Length: 585
Ligand SMILES: Nc1ncnc2c1ncn2[C@@H]1O[C@H](COP(=O)(O)OP(=O)(O)OP(=O)(O)O)[C@@H](O)[C@H]1O
Image (cartoon, rainbow, N blue to C red; front, side, top):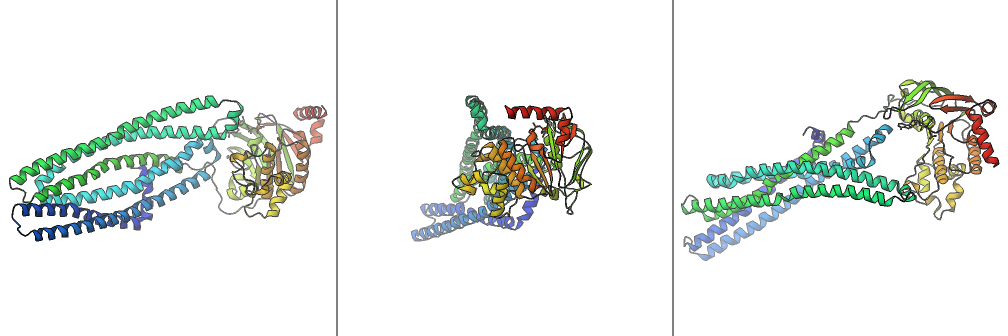
């Protein structure tokens, strides 16, 4: 129950409705009691007439009619209050489910990039859907059943004791055994359902990854292999589900056993006591039979609720693991910190915490407002890492990164990120219209601004060629666009933001040289008062930069302007010569 403590503040939040629920449950239960009572009275009245204790048939008929009316009234009222009871507990559980889902999602959004590298998407999705549903069962149905069971037990057993304590003891004797058996069963169910949940998580992750990577799967023609892997996972999941179903199937027979044993005891012991004159009315026997049957479900519910609580505990534990994960990147400054954009790296060495790969070694450079810095270097040399550090997607431990002379950690994180327009290597587009994908950079952008940004990114012409123009909706990851179009849309999204710092990570790689030229020309005007960093493998993209640095295995091996670098021996000159030759060919 330790993990479920987290939910207590939700109980407090909705205490009004819950207290009303408890009150209504008690009323509904009391009305339930009337039904067996009146049936018992009716049977007694008939028996008395048969035995000649009552001679006037009209009196019996009148008593029966009154009983029938009371029965009807009690059943209706009990039904009505049961309905209201569900309206309180179940509605509260839906509110709590809504609150937790929002809370978990909000927390997910706060967590740093490293967290997403360590956890699989399917697992993250499972926690927000499956686990939250299990927790809802605890807040709603489990609480409701527990309260109605306790109330029913107290009311019914007190009444039974009042009627005949000895017969009551016999009637309820099998209950503890059954409750214990059902509890044991629910422990087994819990263990098995945990395994089922793990399989479900694996299955969701696998399916999600397969759909995301569908183009690669199809291109490599590996559908049969993927199908086979899925089948194996599904087979495992099916077996675990069948295992669970087998144990769950024992529930019904156990309940039948309880009803059977209790009924036999009531009929035998009650019958004997009636014959011996220890029970005055035959109706008491009928009442007891009805009460025993009425109590069977609550007895089973004890085990059922125990299982729900255990599952909710397991799920809440998984949710808490995430909720207690603190974002690796913390905002250390609440006040606003305006940013102009002068970026400086001071002897910076950076090792990725999750892999231990040292991506940058003793890197120092600076780039001021209005300047463009270009970074070239082999793949894996640390270019993207520099951009990620400027966006503070990771924190620096060794050396220092300053912006406008202030340590990046001392800047308001929101201000920092708001002042950056980042175009990643792998452009990600949302399943939304082209307009909204561009407006993602500036929510309140006007139509003119959207079009201007698209024109600057040289993608406007492509957009208006689509039937629905800017209203064209993209599939997941923008699969209806070409690689180059995606890149340019991603550039438009950064430009529209009009940020102080623009970071372009190899985002012209899928664009032909002519379009590249046009984009770079437009960028020159846009980036006049901004700090721009361009990562590229192409000399054409970097040659006009104010300064260029060349990276090799995380170290800066060359720096200077294009003219300086082509004049000295080294990586840059070789790259230039190679690309020049390719162009001429
Ligand atoms: N998120 C990450 N977690 C752990 N290691 C990483 C991560 N991102 C990159 N690396 C590693 O850090 C090194 C530098 O990677 P980086 O992406 O900065 O190189 P790059 O120069 O941008 O390469 P490319 O030109 O191929 O994009 C590589 O060895 C890479 O495997």
